[in-house]
Image 1 (cartoon, rainbow, N blue to C red):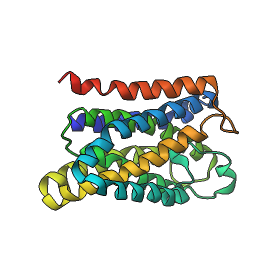
Image 2 (cartoon, rainbow, N blue to C red):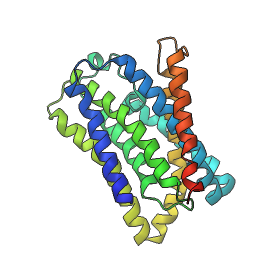
Image 3 (cartoon, helix red, strand yellow):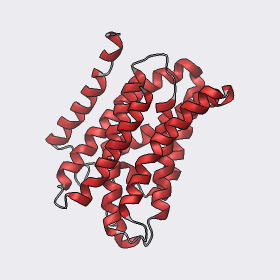
Image 4 (cartoon, one colour):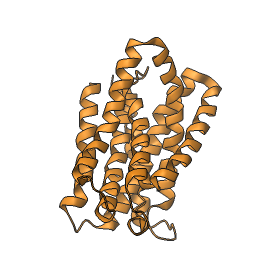
Length: 243
C-alpha cells in the first residue's frame, strides 16, 4: 500500500507542476483558494494524526523536536523564498537562477516524504498523511512551475518538475527500506517525525495567514475552503473507526 501512495504522490505532484505549463490562463484566484484548502487540511492532518503518534512515542520530548522542525523550516525558507507555501510574488525579476530555490524545495520535499515510509500504530495515519501531503504538493508544484516560467534556467523546465515530483516518493522509499533493514534508522525516524511536524505546522499556518488578499483578509470564499479543509481532515478519523 505504501508503494501505491508514493506512486500517487508522484503523479499528483507532476500533474500540479504541469498546470502552469499547459494552462496559461490558470486563475490566481482559484490558486489562493487551493492554497487555503491545502493549508487547513495539512494543519488538520498534522494535529489529528501525526502529533498524537509522535507524543505517544516520545512523550514530552516530542515538543523539543517539533520546535526544531519549525525553526528549521524558517532556515529552509531562506533558500526556497517561501515557494513551498505558495509565494511567487516578483521572484522572477530578482532571481537570476532557480538553483537555490530548487535546492530548498527539494530538501523540504525530502522531509515531507519521510513520514510516508514510517510504520504507525494507528493504520489510519498513513493514508491521512498521504492525503495531507498530496494536497500540499499540488499547489507547491504549481508555484514552482509558475516560477520556472519567469526565471531563467538552462535546464528543461519539465525535467526540473519531474525531479521535484520524484523527491518525496524517493525519501519515502528510503525511509521504508532502511527503517526496516536497520534498527538504528527506524529509531532515528521516530525522532525525525516531530521535526517534520514542526515544518508542517510552519507551512500550514503560513499558508492560512498569507493566502488570499494582500492585506491577509478573511474573505467568505477563504473561510469556506478553510472549513472544508478542516472538515476533510476530521473525516479521516473515520478511517480508523471502520477498521
